Amino acid sequence: MAKLVETFPCVPSTERGRGILISGDPKSDTILYCNGRSVLIRSLQRPQDVEVYGEHGYAATVARYSPNGEWIASADVSGTVRVWGTHNGFVLKNEFRVLAGRIDDLQWSSDCLRIVASGDGKGKSLVRAFAWDSGNTMGDFDGHSRRVLSCAFKPTRPFRIATCGEDFLVNFYDGPPFKFHSSHRQHSNFVNCIRYAPDGSKFITVSSDKKGMIYDGKTGDKIGELASEDGHKGSIYAVSWSPDSKRVLTVSADKSAKIWEISEDGTAGSVIKTLTFTESGGAEDMLVGCLWQNNHLITVSLGGTMSLFSADDMDKPPLLLSGHIKNVTSLAVLGGNQKTILSCSYDGLIVKWLQGVGYNCKLQMKDNTKIKRLAAIDSNILLTGFDNKVWRMPLTDNGFGAADHVDIGNQPLDISIAVDTPEYTTLVSFESGVVLLNGLSILSKIDLGFVVAASVISPDGKEAIVGGQDGKIHMYSVSEDNSLKEEAVLEKHRGAVTVIRYSPDLTMFASGDANREAVVWDRETKQVKLNNMLFHTARINSLAWSPNNKMVATGSVDTNVIVYEVDKPASSRITVRHAHLGGVNAVAFVDECTVASSGEDASVRMWHIEPQ
Image (cartoon, rainbow, N blue to C red; front, side, top):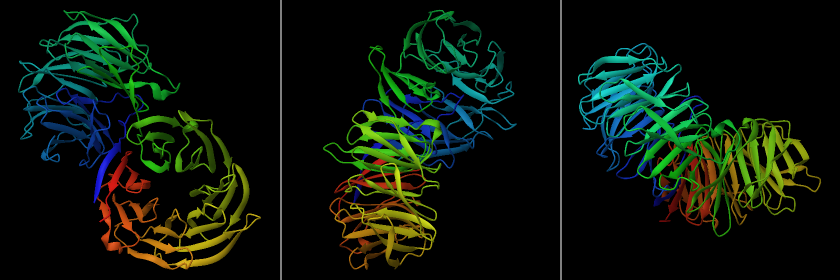
């Protein structure tokens, strides 16, 4: 029996030079955002409470609650809109193919009967309004010639729809059935976002020309604009109204968020507060998304960090929620009273999580260094990437120290630390052999004469096990002069060996292969201790032992995590189905009965395992 106890979720997918949309439900105080094919529902009161909807066949772009909070409409890059329930396991109500290309924005009408979606039509219509239950089109939306980046539905009757896009136009439609009413070209660059005030009296547009324009909500006429003094110095990507329709929040590429007071008649908007952020100095500090919901002001940076400010006390430092945007490739668990979990993603981001707390801090590798593997001991982290380098950095209580590296001349595959050796001897494998490192100095580089796929070194540094592309496992003793002497060759696997791990008491080791099989071996007799571990349907990516040596967890491309008990037949396994959308990349035991897993969905999850 496996139960999900904690999720360290991914953050919204972002794109340089584009705004992103996060939306929410004021009643339940939750927000919605998209990453990959997942739509995440996250509580603002308890940010650790996360639910994930993963039924889209393509990358999701935008999701919105219906005004009554009962339904969610989400759209993806293929032009499909799915309408699904917020309760009882996200039951699908309807699926419609709305546009021929990517959908950038969608909005519900206040009576929950209509939805308008806009985006890239690939030569066909760029905006479409339709009935939420039947999908019937409601009117024609002429007037745009390029991708429509945002649309807004007037929240009060008479209904109106306003749209804006890459052709610098702001178009206004009345209906239903909706038809073209008027067009405005006051902006001189892409118009990124358009939003109606909650009372329906006016709407606002913001653009890459650093300006914001205010229009009358009923007639669509321009009535004012945001003051240029104290304004943004870069493209404005998103705007959100306060619940009382008197103020707006804007975010920009100049790395600032501003709160504007909008005059009663809508003729002017003036800055009343500029929100401050701790900057890391890079482009990832640009702000690309925002939301004003109840008492929360939320901004999203290009690096994915969400900052939660309180509308009552804007000088109070924000609560930061961060995580991975790209797939998490490796995990490491560090001991102590409060377990620390380190995860690294392919794009070179390392995140430190605390069990029971969540996000603690993060480090982005310089020069866009891509990371493949991570190994950690209490005071140091070792990383391998795609650039022939092995990186080492000290780990401090509140972050990471400066990174150092050594070039081993080949692309590293696997990395393993002999934790009981004085200088932490490290074994790094590459395609045709292995390298032994002491700190960051190379002790020896050995060509093994076969294609290497996985490797591990014993904690005392005296034995190394190397798995080959041909499925054979080679056991070596490590001599004083750091050369390897082959002691045995084990044959059982029918595919390339992808992972090998010692049990904590060193009496056993386990291996997994690309042909979905895992094997537990006795280290002394070199015989198979547990076989028939054939319950995955695809390549095994990762493997981990429980601290008490009784359980082995495997993670696979088939999205499942399987936990086997060593003393029982493999058929009495515990399976966590669909642990990660797209596949599981790493597993690690946090304690005797808790497994952490990470995968292609950029999230880290903790599962409580109850042996049967």
